[in-house]
Length: 382
Ligand code: OSB
Ligand code: MG
Image (cartoon, rainbow, N blue to C red; front, side, top):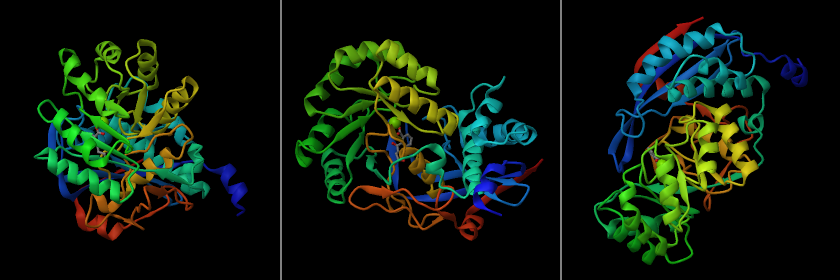
C-alpha cells in the first residue's frame, strides 16, 4: 500500500497493553534535595494495534514519592486499573485525543497517564512511518544538551564534575542544590568553569520564602535560572521570591498543565518553564504548554527524569520543537547506564544530540535485554 494512503487510514485500534517493570542500575548514584537513587526501577509500556504494530512508552515515576506523589507502584496500579482499561475502551484514532479521554473525571496520576499516552504517540508515528519529532511538529535536526549534576560531598568534587562536563561539550551545567549545599558549591563551580559557561541550579522545592535573602546571593553567580526553589503549589510565593531575585526562576514541579503555565505568567511566578511530558500527563499537554509559552514569549526546555533510552526518545522528539530554545536535560545513554535498552544508544557530539529520522522515537528497543531485566509483567487485553 502507498505510504500516503496508508497514513490517511491510520487509526490506533489498540488491542492490548503490556506493562513491564525493569531494574536498571545507574552508573553513579544521583542525589537531589529530597533523596538519592542508585538503581532505577522503571515501568515500560507497550501498546499494540490490531495489526501487530507496537508503540513504546516509559513511566517516569520514581520508587519513592520525593519528586512527585506518584511512584513506580502507584502508577502501575493506576495504569492497570484505570488508565489502560479506559484507553482500550475508547475509540481513539489519534494519540493527541488520548489526553482528553484520560482526564475526564479522573484526577491526578499524570505520570501513569503520560506513560500510556506517550506509547500511543510512538505507535501512531510508527503506523504513519514518520519520526515522532515530525508528528509533534519538531523542526530541529539536533538538540542542545545540558547536564544535571547531583549533590556532591564537597564544592571541589562538584567543581571537578562540572569542569569535566564542560570538557565533553555540554551546553549548560545544572547543579542540584539544597540548604547547606548551595552558595559555596555554586561559587566553586563558577570559579572553576569561568564566566562564560551557562550554569543553573535546581532546588526541587527545598527552600521557603524566608530564604529569599539567602537565595539572592546566587544573583552574583550569573545563573541562567534557578529551578523550582519553593514547593510545587507555591505559585504566589514564587512570584514574591521572583521579585526579590534578578536570576530568572524556572518552574518544574509547579507546572502540571497549561493552566499552571498561564498562572505562572499571570502571577509572575517564573520566567522559564521546564517541560517534562511525564509530569504534565503526556505529549499533548506538553505541546499545549509549549505553544502557550511560545505565544507568551516564555522560553522552555526539556527536563529529564533519568529515563532509559525509550523515554529519552520521547524527550529528544519533544525538544525538537521551536520554542525549546534552551539546552535540555537530555544527556546521552552513557551518562546514566553501562548499557542502555535501545539500539543505537543515544549519543552526544559537542553538546548536540541528533534527532533521529527513523519512525517513532527513532531507535529500536532491545527486547531481549528488556526481557532479561524484567521483574514484573502484565498484559491487559481489550
Ligand atoms: O528536577 O529535573 C529534576 C532527576 C530526577 C528527578 C528530578 C529531576 C531530575 C534531574 C535529572 O534533574 C535530569 C536527567 O534526567 O538527566
Ligand atoms: Mg527540576
